[in-house]
Image 1 (cartoon, helix red, strand yellow):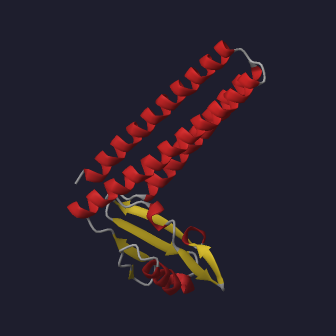
Image 2 (image 1 turned 90 degrees about the vertical axis):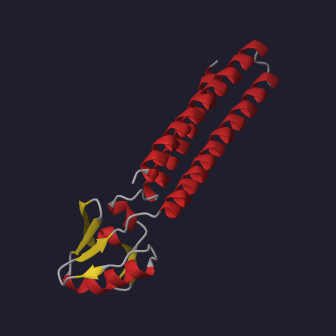
Length: 186
């Protein structure tokens, strides 16, 4: 029984990892509102090394359509502006001498649909992760059965794994519905 508990716990941990990854990926899909995470992939040339933007400047969101970037050193204004342009995020940064102001354009209907497709693809990847965790758990349970654990105990364990799988797939669906609504809201 101890081995089965261990298998169930590690399966649950793996499935939680899939959900956490999905949530992280959903943060990168912008839904019309400006967020500091939108600039998470921007790297600035800081004295010869590529440094994340968040480590050389403060990133603030004063309102739903604006991001301001305030560098800690005045000399970093132009390199930051250049890095945002190079990152190809579809933003047009404006430099006012003290900080960089980015107006986040509203999403078009077509772009919203593309983002929903992207969200669905991420959700599908998470479901694949859940199903892989189920497959690994069932393989481990089969090994236990071969090693002499009773058939009834193994059947019950497989049912528990399936219940876990169903619950986590449902969580993914719920996350997707919320993200879709967020993206499509004008």
